[in-house]
Image (cartoon, rainbow, N blue to C red; front, side, top):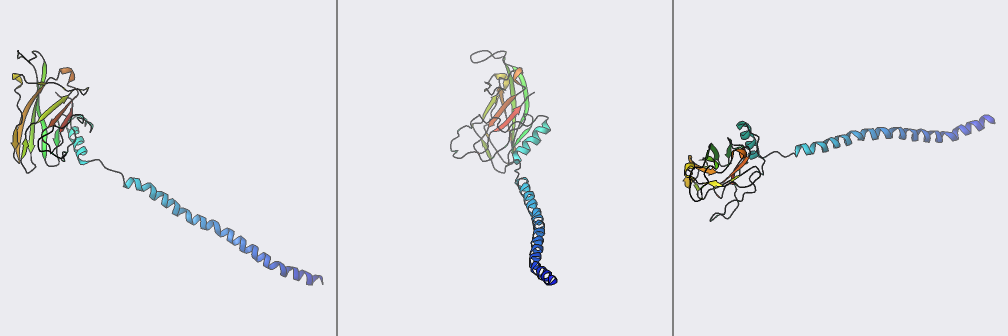
Length: 233
């Protein structure tokens, strides 16, 4: 009788044991499933970190050219904002903003435009005014700037009404000098393709201000003004 009861009890417990074993198996498989999903999350995070690197912007070609030219000249590249306060001259027939640009460079480097027009300060000489009479300032120091423009753009480049502005280290305009000994002369010409034009301008830049000047050359309506910023000697 007792053996029969124990046999019945064991038989009735079998389904309960099977259920426990099934539950235990499902609990053990859950971590494996969770562990398998972790690499995907890690890969997703890695992909997200790589996206900004792929989207990182590069500097403009004109800025790179400016830095290279200034480095070659021995002076650091001026900021892109140099000369920005000098407004372009209003020329007859000009209805659009300048479309050909170039970055600022040091005074002993060359401004290079995308259309192969270049502008440089080929020479700087210093002196003192000696002229006397109305409008003259005998003894005033000046700097005479020789500018050279080369036109390799493939089309004629009219240079009419060229405006040159010089700013001191504080950003204040420097007075032009028209004394006879400066021998100033404007561009005032049309430069044919492959040709070069020169001009000479004088400004009252004292010795104490030569360590930092900004020279802005506005030569036509199609190009942004050529900007030189740094020390002159």
